[in-house]
Image (cartoon, rainbow, N blue to C red; front, side, top):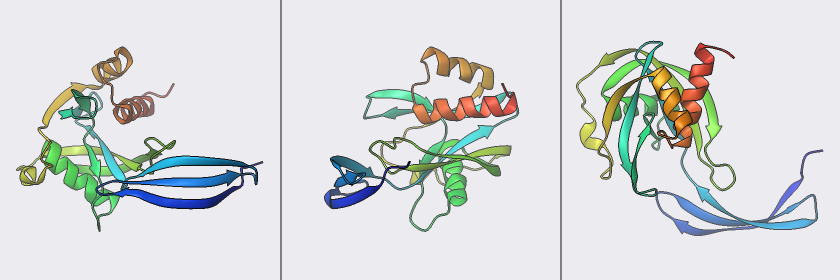
Length: 181
């Protein structure tokens, strides 16, 4: 039987590019739980498939873990954008390519405390373009695009070289899609 949730109170603690709220709710009319919830805009992630053997990843410094990570191109959906429009923009900004986009998966990145829903696309038929939007990247973005063999990317996920969870999930799902278990 599914849990019956009743919200008792919800208050915003912080509002900015992300927001933080504190929720108090009861589960099945009994236990009362308090949770801090990060409210984050939906986002997009892209598997930029050069062919069935290679993908394009980005290397960029991330302040929270204080390290440079290898990731799929990704970013938040801006106000008024559809997920597809955001994916086109992120491909332009981060890797300088355009291509045919196909929706692949949707998933919550950290559903225990965060509302962010990511729309994952596979981009094929890639074409290099003038990187017209590079100037619109965030202040902390210093991105380097890298072509990586899919088999090497899978190994990097499994040996800990790739440490970003959305990237690991996307690469492993895409590799499984191409060569089902």
